Image: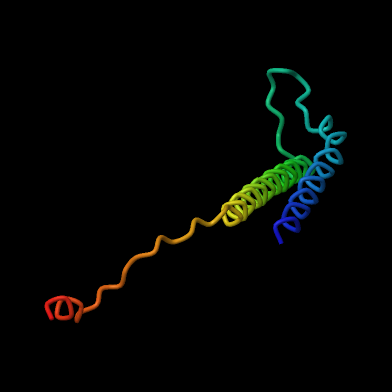
Length: 106
């Protein structure tokens, strides 16, 4: 299950990267004409911004999923190793007998 989430996170990161690379050539159309000027936001530019946001959101969510899966795998491996340690035998302890003091007195 942990490996499945790791693969799912990797797929999500790759889709986010693909979305970012797909929208990169369109970015030149939304750049302002002059360096100090402010460009009006058109519908194509707003779609571009939403594509950028979607790409970054997919990448971040994929990275978080991968980190959580890797941490879970490490924790599981550490716990599994702890159970494989040699178990120390339990020291023999004498059971208290309520009638023992009466037997000794007799």
